[in-house]
Length: 360
Image 1 (tube, rainbow, N blue to C red):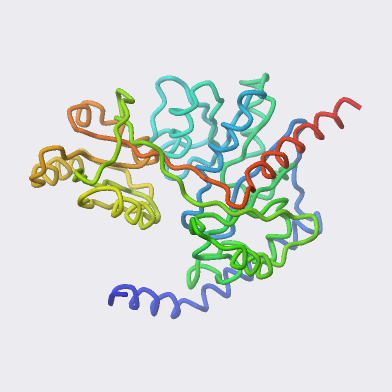
Image 2: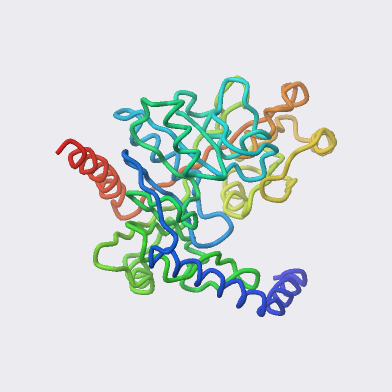
């Protein structure tokens, strides 16, 4: 670990008084919701929430995509996000001319991959769901992206994600740690998914983590690992395999690119890196630097590799990036220990039970 890591850790420890104040505010807010002093709204259709207790990458977007892939063959799906770091305000429903700057990179990612799904954003989620159902009355299931702290809406099914390398049980409040909610808030979840687990996670390790999570009898625990798909050209969608002969320029603006870098270290001859902050808004100057960096790579078959989240922002610069050999690497959750079938059953049973109650 380098000097900057220890410096950052020392600074965060010095911010402990602010963390204690933040934690107090969170505890009071949750108390007001728990005692129904502040009320949560429910809606007359199945609403599934996906969220976490910490800032940083736990895989919320791949989980939303997993749910869309699971449910889309049977139901008409809508998604609602806040639209983090978008330039617009208020409620917006994605359409054919929508850009990531208008709705945010993650909603844009959903819109590009699933054009038939209603993708909406809005800070006021109660008002946004009402407008979404007005605009898309045929919607049968709503998936809330990053919803766990937004308690003004009570999802019928709450899915909580926690990163294997930074479990919420070992974290502390911002800014000393990464927690943005109480650890005990996990009790509101119907399912807890430990994401980014090692491929070779053992049964013994799994049981230790389950014990540490201290789940309630009604809660289900699942473990997933990261699985990458075949890279595809951003515009033509043509696929290509990664080989040990390849030399790539990795272009990222995500919270934690380390798993991706570890993956590439075993798949290609060499990778060069250009990394930006999470949700970075790319500029023409950035793309000029990318072009210069690519030119500096001597390998004949060189190309640029980026994430789907970054591609959602880069696609706005189509005139600048079309000439580039730019490929996108998809990522998805893969359930361990056969948990995929149980997770799918949990989600489908929730929707079927909700519909059955509604018809009684």
